[in-house]
Length: 252
Length: 159
View 1 (cartoon, each protein chain N blue to C red):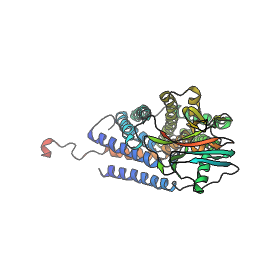
View 2 (cartoon, rainbow over the protein chains, first blue to last red):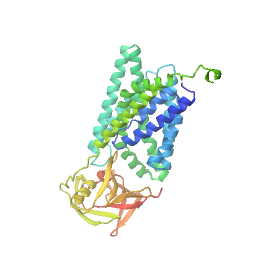
View 3 (cartoon, each protein chain N blue to C red):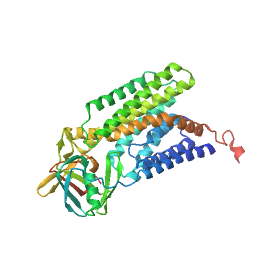
View 4 (cartoon, helix red, strand yellow):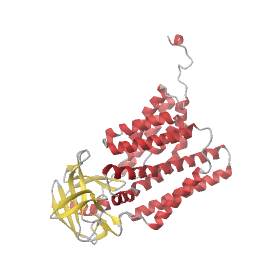
C-alpha cells in the first residue's frame, strides 16, 4: 500500500482531499477547532509520503474554490502541508518506532514555552488577555499530561504501551507542527505585504489567538482519533480487490 | 469496498456531528451594553460607520458599541465568530465580497505596550484625523477614552 500509487491509492487521495475540505469548512464555524491535522496525519501515516503529498497539494489548491484564491495562503499551505505529509509519511513507513527522546523533548519544550509565556504575559489586546492566559495554561496542562502518559507507558512496556507511546509521540509532533504553521504565517505574511519589523512583531502576537486553541486541539485530536483513523485507513488500504490474481483470460 | 464505504460513512458522521456543534455555536449575541463607556455614533451610512468614544471602558469592545447602536436601531451588523473574535461581514445591509470588505480603523495606537492599529496596514481619513487599520477585529478593540473607531467599506487591494 505505502509508496504505491495505484488506482486504489489515488481514489483514497481524492476521498481524503474531499473530506479535508469538508471538515475544514464545517469546523470553520467553530473557532479553534480543527481536525485537518489528525485526518491528514493518519492518512499519510497509513498510505505513505507520496500519497500524502498528492493529497496535501490537492487540498491546498482545491480549498481555494471555497475560501478564495489568496496567493500567500496557497504558498503557505503548499509548503506546510507537503512538509507535513512528507514527515508523517516517512514516519509511517519506518519499521522502527519514533526515537524515545523526541516526544519528551518536544513536550517539555512546548510546556515550558507556554508556562513562561503565561507567567510573563503576552502583549495582546486587553480584551483577550484572560483568554490567551487560559489557553496557555491549558496547553501547558495538555503537554504535561501527555508527558506523564508517555513516561508511564515507557515504564509499563508491551505492545499496547508501544502503540500508546507512538500515538503520544505523533500527538507531540502534530502540536509542534501546528505551532510551526502559525510561525510560517508570521514570516510569510509580513514578507508578502512588506511589513516593517514592528508591524511583523504585532502580527506575531496576534497569531497566538489562533495558534493556541489549534495546538491544543491538534494534540488532543491525535491522541483520541489517531488509533481509530489508523485502523480505518489501514483496513481500507489492505483489502485486496476481488479481481487480483485473475488473468485477462479469466475476466473475458 | 464495503469497509471503505463504512470508513467514509464514519468520517461523514464525524463531519455531521461537527456541523451540529457549529450550528449550535451560531447563536446570536445580544447587546452586552457599554458598561462605563459613553460612545456617540457620528455617522452611519452604507459605506462607513464612525463612532467616537467620549468615556472609555477598557473591558468593553467596539463590537459591544456596534451591538449597542444596533439595539437602538441606528445601524445593523452581521458576521460570525472566528479565532480572532467577531468577524464582521455586513454593515447596514451591505455584504462583504471578494473585492470589498469591512475594514476596521481606529485612532487608538499603542496602549500598555500592545499595538491596536498600524498605519502600514492602511489608513482612513475622517474629520481631519487619520485612523490606522486595526490589528484586531471589532471584538478585540477596547473602548478607549477620546478615540475614534470606523468600520469602512474597503477595496481589497489583493483581489
